[in-house]
Amino acid sequence: MAYAVREALAAFRRAPVLTSLSAAMIALSLFVIGLFGIAAHNVRRVLDQVESRVEVVAYLRDNASTDAVQLALAEVRAYPEVLEAFYVSRDEALERARQQLPEFRTLFGELEVNPLPASIEVRLLPGQRSPEIVQRVAERISAYPFVEDTRYGREWIDKIYLLRRIAGAAALVVGGAFAAVATLIIGTAIRMAIFARREEIQIMRLVGATDSFIRRPFLIEGLLTGLIGAGLALSLTYTTYKVLFRAVFELAWLPDTWVVAGLATGGVLGLLASSIAVRRHLREL
Image 1 (cartoon, rainbow, N blue to C red):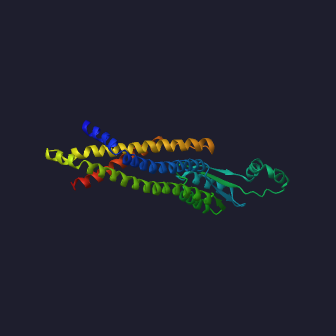
Image 2: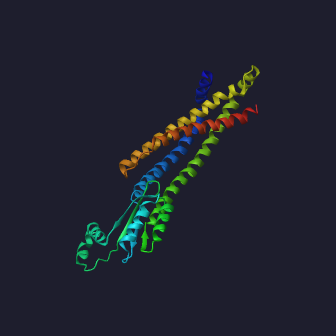
Image 3: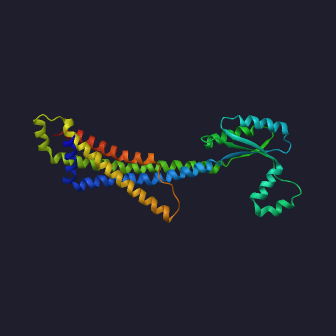
């Protein structure tokens, strides 16, 4: 193993341009993924905050009986998706409007008849606030005959989930394209290294060296190249994050698991590229 590590490090000195280019391409691909990752992570945080306020509001008819409403409340609270449900009377709704809409406080104070309906407000459990689940709960509540209408902000919920999916897909597509280019460059670097050392490799085979022994330095070279590229990408991503954090708006940094996964991805990418190149080109010698 010591021999393999020495040979791998020597390869950096023999072909610094190709090695640097390989690491740079891996860094660029992971940097792009990192930027989209920051965007996706912060969109997810915003979505989580919005989801915590997601609720279904069922507006009741004026002739809804108290017994029927209380029975419905008990049934709704038993839904597996529901965190809590409570009844809001017409007077409570008017008082809320006065507090939350101060610009209409004078108007509300002059009303002789309360125009606001009573309602049932339903809050959902964490993990049970996707558009599909919220819609399903709203439809079940709408089935009660004394419910006139249900609202849950379907349009903006759908848009936020769509934004998160777009951010994740863009990171995979753009980052994957750069990763493919990086793989080709690493493969080219390994192929040139094998070609430059073809006579040495042939002599090693004559004295009994196995293919696994010959491949080992090239695999370590690819692994180190990938790790260097991943480390560079992490530095660039963090620098960009700090600039945006200070100059534009507050952002959250990536979770530790994502950072570790990014570093591991760089190493695996370099190892995989060199493994494919070595296996293919050793057959030609």
